[in-house]
Length: 612
Image (tube, rainbow, N blue to C red; front, side, top):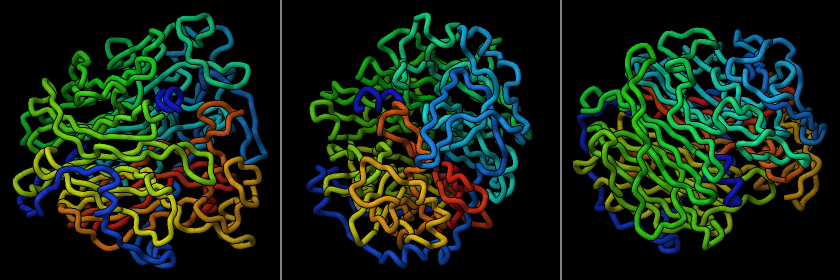
């Protein structure tokens, strides 16, 4: 994700049920302007939305405050922007409680580092943004969340980390940085999937950069300044946590004595990004336990999409990765495609969406198309175009965090009109604020329903980063970040917990600071449920118990001295069987202090709510 934003401005599927749904005839996807004329407007009051956390019986916990985690970064960074927005620079490890290897001596992949690298010692992990969450198909109470594990938000200096629950998300006793790729400056884009054995696969993007004098990130490769010339500059790679693992260090990261690479890149002008993974866990599928890895390679600005696959084996092993294969794109898409989001239907068909952002329109116009393979990834074709054209957000009012992935994709496991449904949700900024729009296909992607607006706020506000999943009974859920509620009022307990007094300098905001009572500024997490044919089940539900300030401790993804900050480009949403029904789990950012986060750092809030 670093490259697209820098250069262009830049499951497991539940087993199929036997129920059959009937849907209204699908419509050919429409343009953004025409679609808005067909939006089904439903609204609820802000007070009802605020109260829905309690009325819906949501439970949540700030999972990443449970343990103290540390690691030795490959590239240290000393800039401290504090006390503004709560920043405090890098800090030496005070003593981890995770049981992870904190790097008291350099890690194996740091052995070939140039002089000056790695850092002199372990550093404290402070912030956790961008996330994914998965439920073990062999045990619905076993969950693994993954996130960026940040030692320096000023330098955007992070590995990937994980947090693990064995009681349905109530507690998260096992967590730490994910080992094996410490010899790169950053590891990024957390995403994982379980195989049928209960082994957890994390698809990783380790990459090298160093800091120029102004604090910007320099991605030059093949030079004496590269931190670690002994390792590839950038890679797509795998970490596997075997079923039954209990400690933070129980990961398989090597194959034949070297890291488990899917693809490596060392040449200037090539850069992998936005990798994603899915595993076919339906025993009836002809490609049962096939692991699909997807990513794009940015040839300078133009992203080229690729797929590789392997077969999962018991004990966290797998067959060799297939040679990367380029995915097809529709005609007349010279700008390339990114944001690959593969999912498998119960018949073994693999679908993924791909997103085009048009440089001819300054990347402000987005289209989304879908690819499909019905032979286990051997061959691919374009299935259809769910979003022909939509105005993409180029930023959000009042705050400095950058936009993320504009769309999300999932598939249903219950037949509708003889087909497994496909669902796409996307951001539409055509009205001046960002709304989340949902469309479906019931014929394999050929045609798509007129989109419906997901967010039901009555007053205009930005509703963004929607994330889709579908439960085994056909229920669809869309989780998203929500800014309809004003920031807490000055002097209130909510304001003190939100840490608003730390927010005193914001170049994007024209009002008075701290932002007491500010509109379209503070953030919550929300969710909306639908049946398989997109009839809403109730109203939007608030998933976060408190609003949070996205300015606090927000990583600087480009340069410490730049104004652009980072909330994450997506967050996690999944479902698991629970008590005869299903529970929806999300993991998203909060900076609120629930009593365990006194420095108002970016933590991962895991919320659980019953699927209606």
